[in-house]
Image (tube, rainbow, N blue to C red):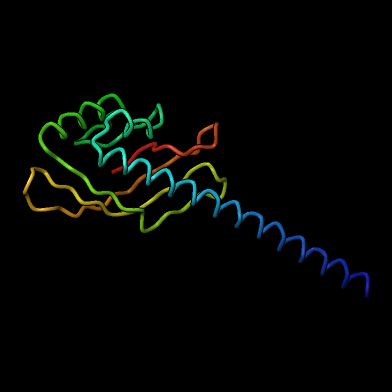
Length: 144
């Protein structure tokens, strides 16, 4: 009976240790994604097109109209919007989740957009999908 109690206690402690390690890793990834968001927002708000696009994975796609557009298209789209006077104010996501596998994440949050200088600020909601890169950084795979 003592041996059974010892084995059960040991297994419970082992499970708790694995769970705590997974939670710590998840917090580390969430913090890395938040840091990425801050750097991306800084580039976007500064209207740094190349800096902004550097946060997109090579296979990045964005739904636009009835089709999916790629990173190259979005770069040109961004240049056009900036030339029209569009400005953005980004915020950290309200909801951020990392997959159990630790290589995908999604974020839901708000941002402000002004279409023309002096125009009314529009508050918009976005849904982002991110993937962990081979080097450990996070990049956007898609957003809406």
